[in-house]
Figure (cartoon, rainbow, N blue to C red):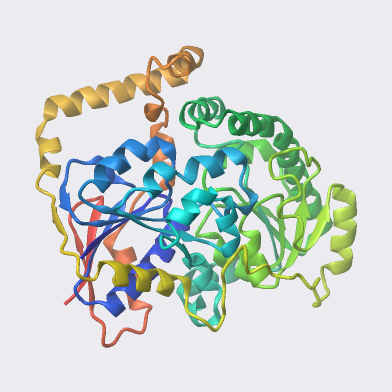
Amino acid sequence: MIINIPIEVKDRELHSKLLICYHLLKREKKIKIVLTKSNILLDEKINKKNIVYFEKSLSSHKQILQKKLLKENFIINLDEEGPFYHWPIAFKKNRINSKIINKKNFKYFFIWGSNEKFFFNKNLLKNNKQKIVISGHPKFDYLKKKNRKFFSKEIKFIDRNFKNIILISSSFFYDTVIDEDLYKIYIRDTIKDKKGVEQFFKNFNYDFENYVGLINLSKKIAKKFKNHTIIFRPHPRQDINKVKNRFGKIPKNLKIIYKFTSSPWIIKSNIYVHSHCATVYEALLLKKKIFCFRPNLKMMYEKKLTEYGEFYQDENKLIEKLSKQINKKKIKNNIFNSKIIHFDEKGLDSSEIIAKKIIQKFRKVKSEIKYNKISEKKRSYIKYFIFSLLSILKGFLYNNFKIFYLFLFRYSIIKSKYIFTKDYKKNKIKSLQISEINNFFKKIDNSNLKIYCKKINEKIFEIYRK
């Protein structure tokens, strides 16, 4: 059995995907895991048969490639973008893709909690009951005490550099690596639900007030609580330099940092502040003091995610309450909704649940993969030259003639799949090193489990047992 696990946003996905790898290899020796940078096995003309492709979303823009893959291979899916509970209409309909789920070789749709079943079409759910599996998400496995050792290096770094942390988590579509106008074109071209697209565009206007409000709140908190370190953590899609420019001059105890995944920052924080970030579930499970600030409720989340901790629309009232709570050990008794996030401190890890299901379904499958066709791309210097030239031209147009650049995409003269800039792609996963993979497995007590990693090229790694 060969399983392909693509990594798109390294800081967010790598640790949770490697934990799934570990449990797969622990349960079954005759498994080869192909870890790749992004979805190159979906795109590249690599000979493959009966591989299990671990997808991170069933977005409609990948539908053609996924259908081709399903002819001779299998797809399973765990969406990375958070539980459907707080998603806008457009995203829900776009990522619960019946045209893929109904395919014979699509085998599993792992969901974060039982609540997510309500967002599936009734007929789709009825016809695919065995495919929809409640697993939770492996990132929450690291919140269990037995697994926190994986963040020891990150936690030591935080302890050395910052004290009394108030973490403010961003989750906005502003100041992103990709231009907001380009992203709107991409949404319009790839999402077919018109009502959902209209809702998304309205959200762009309404939610900006919340973004600016959270930035101003961050500055006020820093000025008020000078003995605390205020960490403002941008979202993975945001450009940290744009975010810093938006802040302007800031107090010395306010730090704008995007480093590591969010979990070690939440573990080491005393207080967690957000507007509508899904990492609030981690803060909730870790029993942190939670403050939600959202002045404008007309946006797509409405009042979702405000039910945990304290909710305010007025920054002065939030700071007043924060002043009273900041040194108190007792927190508001939040009721965790296990229907939204499946999490059991003493039960099986989500990564174990997923690994167990995969092995049950595919143990007897014989997979094949050959990488020989990858080198052909390198030999074609003419194609490489043309591609590089077009990439340079694309960058030149964007930087110098942005209106014309937008015109080309808005009227489909250039297809929307080429809309993402090189900076946007690099921001997702700048590099993946074999040492990072090996160091992860060294942290696991695996004296009887010898795991090896082989580098095929800069984008492909094989993980296996001997």
